[in-house]
Length: 285
Image (tube, rainbow, N blue to C red; front, side):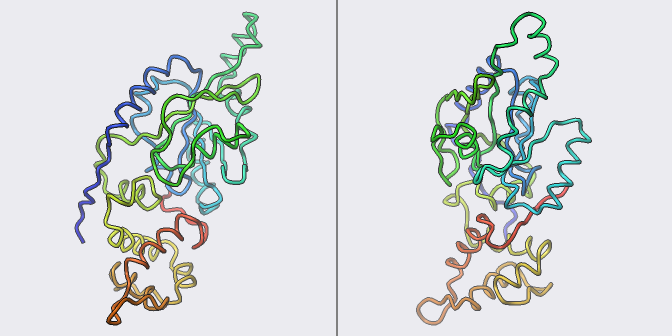
């Protein structure tokens, strides 16, 4: 398989999004960085530090319902060891969301004490919410706000423009468009983002992506792979052969009895992304 993924990482609207984040950093007290709990390393934008000029940051491990709970616990400990504040959430059913306001206020406790001393205790805290595309940011914002405030989609990059959301009288959030970074040097990072849907499938070879995901799942979760697709993922099988084996077991055929590997590839990616295969994490700290 070709090791170059040939992904157009940086569509034009992302340059505009970067500028917006930079310009609005001065308006906020803190930054909430939402990452995908299945790929916490790959879904953190390395440019955030520079763009937000060292503002206090809360790392939100989102989609914990899809991630391996044991691995999520390891990541939580890892970030705490790095002296980072962490909040674990599942924006689909709202798990952990109620802790957001308290977590931000804890992050800003020194600033809030200073405000109190100046008689500004009633002033609401403002936080910017950022993340790469498709980490569940809009769903998260909607759950926090308790209404459909941000446009949501399973397609990356649908949030446009600046949106302030009043959570309560003590917290206001600034929603921002999801941004990738201009150049991804590590192919493993690119693959992880592609597996979880942070990059649009239309600009990738879906069958190649599925073959690579099969190899990853055989390495990390062979029992779950076998249980779902009813075949033994042998260690010497290529990714393409693993996709073919699953297609054969599902009876996916096209005219002439040829295996419909494209259909199988699409289903594999959908089932992984939707948690149908089980709770899986692709990265450990």
